[in-house]
Length: 314
Image (cartoon, rainbow, N blue to C red; front, side, top):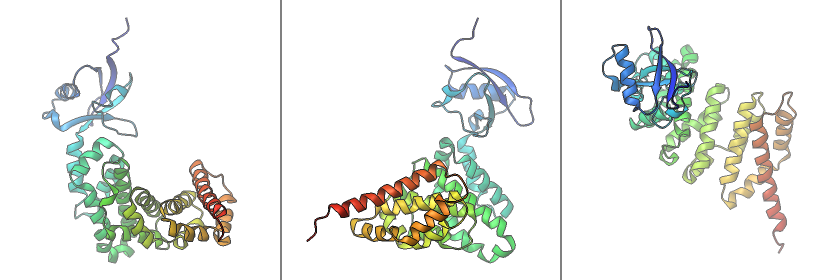
């Protein structure tokens, strides 16, 4: 006789213990299931625990997504999102560089999960990250030469966590300071910047421009197409893709009086030649995202040319 539809058979892991095979009744509250699991391992304070997928996603199980659990799923008993967020909020402020680096690495990974992200944001975590970007880079400036790999990794994980947290759409883009925008723009404008830092900085600038009129104005003051061109001349297609995405965003959000100016820049033979040589004719296949961004750029350019064609001459 097949098991009831509301019963799923799973394995649950806990560090240092043998996995438990368990039948989960989907009609029972999740808190009751977690208490049952904790009792089986003699763990007190079950409210401080949660279940998460044991695969690479590590996403938390919630009342909203618990129906996605299938027979044979491997779960992990772990600290609750609120506990985890509180611990990481403290760990990323550690005075130990190694501890801070490890904490930022964990934060960058966990921030993909909206359940954790909400808890970290509730602790004003995004403000903490922006402060770290604004001031932390200055604080370690003198140490860069002797600890450059560590510095680069810290900044990369900080920006990755920021991007992942903002991607959930919980916090408005209108809340960021000019100092933060200038700092992100400086990473894009600086030659020889670490690839991962550059990629995330470009992604942040694109989102700022697309999601806030006020931020468009501020970003446009810090970044010009001329400053973006060198990134198109590199060999990293992901960087090229994000660069064209930023150009498209600036073009799309530009007011009418500036759009013509941008169109003139885009129409210059030099820029078209660079895109043709380093992007389209490069010795590698064009990925789907790059193809999409090139299409958007083409449409934006053609639309402007059409407007000019339809304009009556005096």
